Length: 392
Ligand code: FEO
Image (tube, rainbow, N blue to C red; front, side):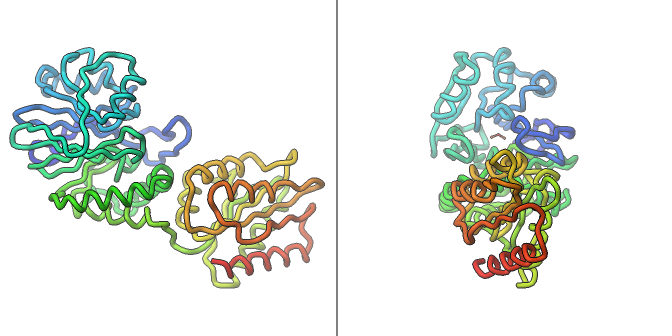
C-alpha cells in the first residue's frame, strides 16, 4: 500500500514474473502490474481489483490494512479479468457494498460472474462525493473494451484511466520519474501498438473530449505499469501522435524460410531499399517475438512480408504475424510480398491477400522465385526493393 497523492493510494499487485498476457498472445518481457487504487476520504472507495490468481492476497491485505468493513463503494472501470478478477472473492466478504460501473460494465460483470451484485450504473458526468474529493466518471467505450471507463478524482486531480496510458512494466518504483524512461516508452508504445491501434480514431476523440473538459490533471494513474506523475500529459500527447496514423519512416521486412531461399530474397530486397537510402530492418518471423514485430510494423511506413510456399500456403510463423497485423488494421502504410517456391508457389499471392485484408495498400506485385534464387533472381529482388522505395 503506497500513497499516490493526497487521499489516493495504490493497493495493486506487481507481477514480476509474468511473461505472457492475454493467454499467450502478448509477451511481457518486463512483467506487469495490476493497479488497484483506494480513495481514503470520508468515504473509502476501491477502484478496480487485481487479476484472479492474486485475489486471496489482495483481499487479505486490504482487510489487514484498512478493514474491509470500511469500504463504502467499489468502482470497476473495466471488467476484464486482470482488473475485475478478484471481484467475486471480494464481494463474498462485502456483498452489500455498491459497485459503480458503466452500463456495458454491468452487462459484462453479470456475464463474467453470474451473480447478483449491487451494481450502480454511471455514465459520463455522473459524480460521487467522497468528502474532500469527488469522483467523476467518464465513459471510454472501446478503449479497449465496450465497458471501459475512466474515474477522475477531482480534488486530488488524479485521472484513474484503467488500461489507457498503461504499460506492461513491473518496477519497484511507482512513478514515471523514478524509472528508466527508455524502457517505459518501449513498453508504453508496445502496449499501444498491440492493444489500442484498432481504436485509434476513438483515442483521438477521447483525447479531444478530455482536454476540452479543462480540468486539472496532476497525475494519470493507469491500471498497468507506472503512474505518470512528472508531466503527466506527456503520455496524452504521445497517444495523440500514436493514434494519428503513426510511423517513423523506413521499411520492415518480415519473412520465414525453409532452406534459406526466401531469406536470400529478403536480404536482396533490403539491399535495394538501402541503395535508395531507406532505413530497413529484417526479421525472421519464426525467431522473433511477434508482439515486438507488431511494434516494428507500427513504426514503419512500409511492410514487406515473405514466406516460402508450403502445402500450397504460407509458413505458420508468417501466417500468425499476418493474422495479428490484419486484426490491428494499421493505417497509412504500404506493403508488398515475396517468397520462394518449388512447384505451386501460392504463398506470395496469399500474403498479398492477407495484407489487403489488413487494410494495407499493396504497392507492388508480389515477387516469387522458384527454388534457390540465381544471381539474376537476386538482382530482381534488389530491383524490387528499389522500386518499393519509390512508393514510400
Ligand atoms: Fe488490463 Fe483490458 O485489461
